[in-house]
Image 1 (cartoon, rainbow, N blue to C red):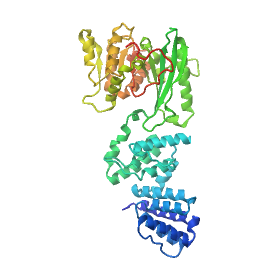
Image 2 (cartoon, one colour):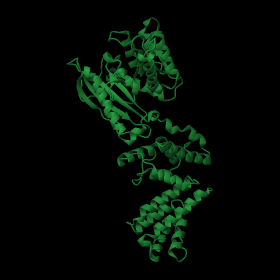
Image 3 (spheres, one colour):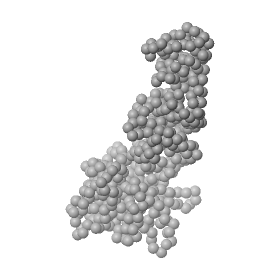
Image 4 (cartoon, rainbow, N blue to C red):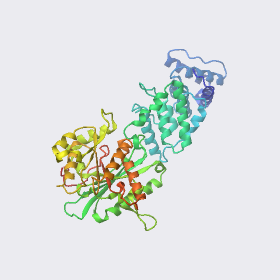
Length: 509
């Protein structure tokens, strides 16, 4: 039973709106038409549906009240009206009012009309096709994948909410409509509006005694939700076999969080152009500039908190300090990438060595799932006697997600390459080193601090903070650890499309 006066008032208003819509139907303006409608309803329900009184308004009011008291009654009313007058323009309105009646009964609010006004005002994208894609993605999250039958009329935030309000909650879960409202609160740019939406959800949670489910918010922890407002711009540098001075330069972007936001999501590979190695820095700046222009001229761009720049490099280039490559500015003073972006490197060798992808993906999944032991890093120089076989055995421990090299990367005869190759074989996704001296105490202290400061997935952003501190202290007596600390970050869930042409897929591991 509804106890909120405001919710009851909204239901009275909805009944009045339903009656007004029925009165506008051409087929119901005659006594015969109204009798035919209740006859169809009687056949459908298997019981006599009354048509009380002589005045048309009172008859329709009584009919609406009868339908409102029965489960599916308003939907049945629409079905029968569609048989009686298939092209009646009022059918769509009655359908929407019926959905709102169901939603108001399922999630009553003392200021329901204000809530309806708020949801009607929310837009997720300027482009209708993009709006529909985002709505479907949010509906999928809200219903835990059980809402694949979203009607074609659900093309706005309000209509999707009404549709979801008719769906029951799963075991130990919130009603899908409440999850949908929470997802909206996380997407809208207006903080006051977001707080208002969360207040509605909290009042419902208190009413239904499910505040623990709201606080737990399992839907926010789904894979990919951690960086819903982060764009990953991934560059790939592929050496050409016939000209050592040239490389194939490619790039793609990834922008898709738990709600599917971002134009294109995991977009197709772009570029695949041969460029001189000396021109790589300028080419990278050009691509970043194009992305920044796109984000700056679209509404969705305002929600982006960071552009993470990733360089997929062959081993021979892996120690290149790409984080200090320059970005052009309005003046003739260039700034390093690290000033504006988290920058990590990725391994082209691992991308080519598909034999080891299974171990890589399994190890990466341990970073997001439940483990018997917390994720930890492995210091390769702690392996006494430089026993590579013993190190390979130790790296089989699936709680190890990061390897710290004993020395900076050199050629493929170096100790660092042997260590990295073992990490690739074991599927260890993160490799860390100092570009100059891996035995430096400041380096070891910085690495330990980054891991102790929070979860593994926040490592690229903590690395960015460390580099920002290094740029601030560039005139310090002793070099800051952030000046030379490098992180190889191979995300196994974000793989590039292969080259449209190439020279082998197994690399040199």
